[in-house]
Image 1: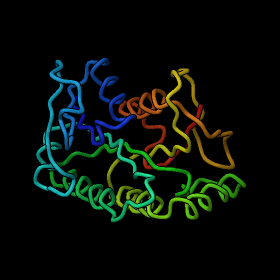
Image 2 (image 1 turned 180 degrees about the vertical axis):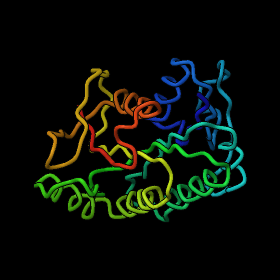
Image 3 (image 1 turned 90 degrees about the vertical axis):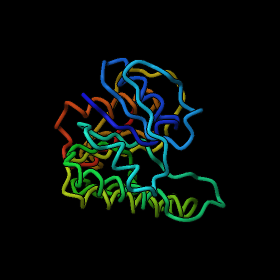
Image 4 (image 1 turned 180 degrees about the horizontal axis):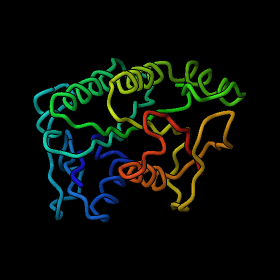
Length: 212
């Protein structure tokens, strides 16, 4: 399968690229700084550009079978703007223009899924995010809205506390109030979940919360 990866030099994105290549997929990594990505490697193409460059985004997507976005907002207190929201809108636009349907990305439980039931966890997480990381929360809300309202075949994996511990190969996935979802999840297992969605339609047009 041909897959375009956005956020390919991030902590999760690097693992997504590694797993895709290990599984035999053809990967196009969209990056701002190619020096941050290990290359050359077989079946890896690199598209250098900025998310705001719509033509470059379209070029990276054209001819692919699916898009995986490992983009996530920075938690730095002095960051500003909504570059990732605008970038996600550009990705969605480019997918529509090139006929690519499958989008797999990241979000957080701060943005509810319609299948969630009211829970203490569902109340606390958005409140903490709004208090501590308001700009990051605005970005996640904007990115999620751009995808969920796109009409594409999308899945958003909602994560809370990514860690760098070794992957354990198991996870919990589902919706708040229905399924027992924890908080922490290794980045290795997050990447594995994203890649698995290429051939799994269980969470089509849904945003499952996931954890170890």
